[in-house]
Length: 434
Image 1 (cartoon, one colour):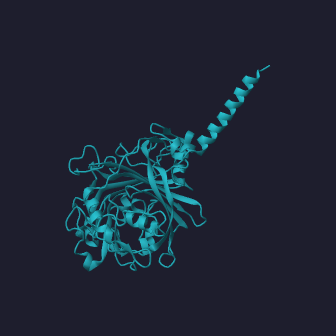
Image 2 (cartoon, helix red, strand yellow):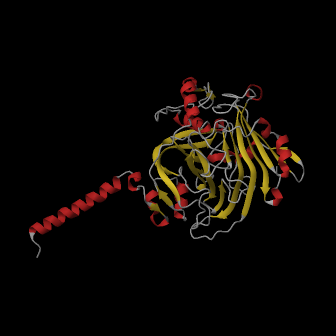
């Protein structure tokens, strides 16, 4: 027979155990994950509230994560100086969407969560993010198509390689002359130009290309053109195609770098600020092709706790009736203004596609760089993968692409491109693989 004191002690221990469980359950989700943890499908529940639903699907289907300490992501000094100089004059137009008074730097350095315009201000900050402000040339941009699922073997369905993927900003320039605005903007009203050409692989696409322009005029839609070397024809593309996939890839033009439609084409809702995981210090270049999910994600890779803005975007019916999705949920790093994840929902409101970004932060794109070396650290994309979680089809893109003719690949704000590189003439001229 147990003594009264033993029974009392046992009851106290039982009560303490219950209280401990309650306290653990009430801890913020981020407090249950710490540097040194290794996340796999077996313990995926630990990060369920720390990643987007699309990223959680990835973890449950084979992606692993190495949790590392959170580090500071600082802005390039020229961007910081431009923000201090010009941000005070920036405001939203009466439509609550368009930007007025912008010159360079971050448009809205102070975000008030209670501001009814917080969401659209965050989107403008993301649009003029510090990752690049003037231009970039990403060489040998390659993507493979695989089926992502727990235990799937690696089976490459398609491979596409593009010689040059890049952009040229005419507004907000901070590092390369002409600054802060290219004089052409006063004539063309083009805010930025982008290109993807020539396709080098597969053979049936070799020599193809796409270019596009975005205008400062809030009422003018994007222009884009494609070139087909088989027909030797340049074709102007309907604006609706920006929301359609490029060839067999899961990506479309408005998905560039995670999320890139014209701001005025959508309505925005601020869903809150959260502590979430993001991959901003990936050490392996290119990222590790995940061996446990069919190769649809990067793993294992370094993930850290970040302060993240969560924004819901829905197509503005007055301007955009062609969006494939009922809504987008975009997860933006509050410090770097870069998209960490983007979940797209189908017309039934069910999760359909997830984009995940893997980046690195240092003074060069790869450790052995000889040319692209900077006097300060900046972000470089290592991998971006877009996966249809309903079918498992994944587009896995990386820079630098393995076995590419060169290793550095990322040339940001180095004046490596100019206006002439973003014309239909340049696209046709480079069709031979130049």
